[in-house]
Length: 288
Image (tube, rainbow, N blue to C red; front, side):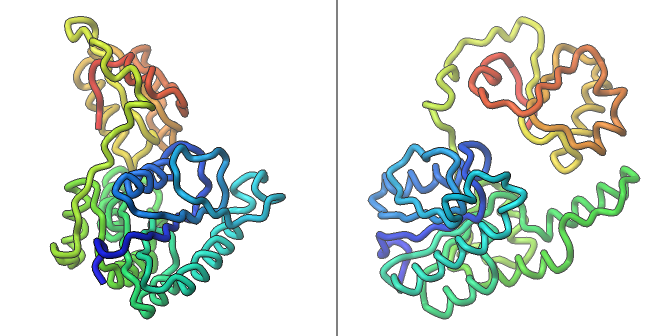
């Protein structure tokens, strides 16, 4: 059965929905499914707010546990959500296709494959094998502690997971290259783009004066993995030619090692930002 012939979808992401970050991206992708006439049910551990879409929502955590800090209920939440999800997949069979973000277990993926259900995987970042290679090299180059956030076992699990996927969504060219690096055939890679939401960024059309002071904005976790150390060094090497705004949480290791660079008066540490529309509108250049 092709993905196109199935007009119903069961979707899984084992994370708390907050309206920000990957959980927001997950729900926005499902909104797009709806615009294509695909009837979708989403499974997540909990919803901290109601997603702005018409997707049916199933929460894995019992009501009383949904309000506890995520660090205390995350493991149980993922387990319970996956249990409900697998039950739904068995009941639906080939009348639906499955769309999943990364943390659906390999056991679940194998079961879905054995059932003959079409499985689509969303890549929200590089293949873990590529990411591990890059970070091992960077940690060695920077003299950082041994990198262990992605293990060899994690890479092996990713390889096994993707082996069962009928199609894999790659949201940018770097993700595509990382999939090709690990032997994924071009035929299974579907290049996509997340785009942007006009309702979330109502100030996007605000005119910018590029003749004024340079205001460079970096959005994301300010970390070695995101290349923030490279940006900070480049900023100083360029003579700190304006204002550099860092919108995101600081990685403690980077904050400790680059305290001098971060302390410069041209650098604004905004921390986690909820009003990204105004933040973007205040800048006239962006560091990606």
